[in-house]
Length: 188
Image 1: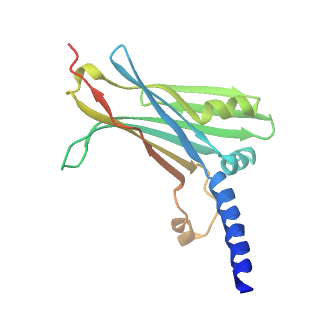
Image 2: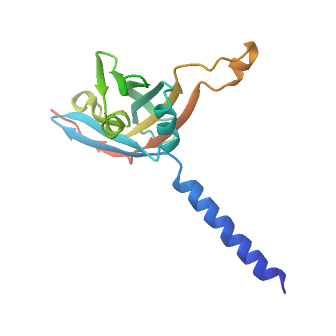
């Protein structure tokens, strides 16, 4: 009989540790999808990235890659890949000048910025807004959904000996999320 109170206490303590572990994990907010002038526009962001922020503020250069894919839903068949967009954002903190050097590349153009305030750079770095994924006019009438993949990589490799460099993972953080299916009608 004395074992049951101990079991209940251990159960509730383990639940509290699980809750704090889940609350601290990074996750994707969105993807929010709108159709504006027949264009599929996607917005998303990342939340709970405390560990990544601390490595950036320590001066380690990071690359954040947002991949947004449009897929067509098929019954009894694998979903069809339609189109994807990739946005690469790179950040490096300069300890001597005390500013953040960032760049963004969307496959067409590259933009470079300098920030003094980390709050401004955090909002810019972990958010991908107004991604024009596809024109709905060219799509067949069907159900579609948006898949988002966010990856983080360290640009600067740590000085390790020979074989040990191959044991380190290239991608440090990888998150994925899918939107709810939506229907696209025939557009004339």
